[in-house]
View 1 (cartoon, rainbow, N blue to C red):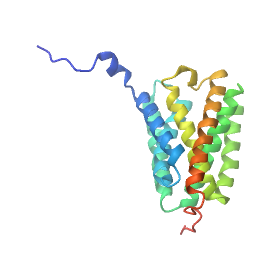
View 2: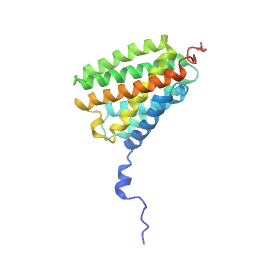
View 3: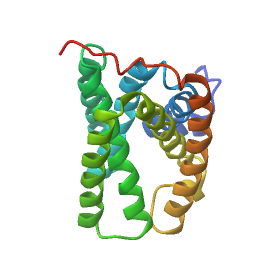
View 4: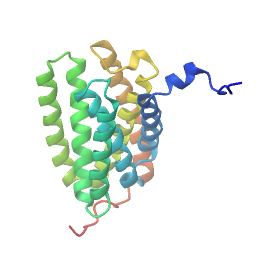
Length: 205
């Protein structure tokens, strides 16, 4: 007699790779949003994996999750290399990622063409990257709060259709939720860590 799994087949099928990433995005996003400043370098690696996976979903078909995972691993490794010995570069990369995805979401919410969305993302990456290089500590709080909010909303979108990253109205709702959650995270972190100067300390590079 064949032994049956204690888990229903439907449940096993639902636990696809993308759903594990949605769950990881929710957990990492919440930690980053509300307590990200002291954990910045660790969260940098975790966020790199998730953002790389998200980028893979943008560039590749959903039927190729392996490519998304590979991009996530590559980005996580790159950020891991920079996170500990080179703080300034790590901060700039986080700022660039935040700028890219925020303006990318704005472009998507406005139903811009793919080319315009990519250009907006590149512009956001440039502006935020430069800002984060010169104002490290305050903007690490900003980055972890709003990057965390973005990851949180991305993860929720896997379970709540209204927050799924897509066209038009859903993206507007995404932005509203990100701004509200990110604002709360920033306010909490600023109240706890505003006097710290962890990332402004000169590092050997």
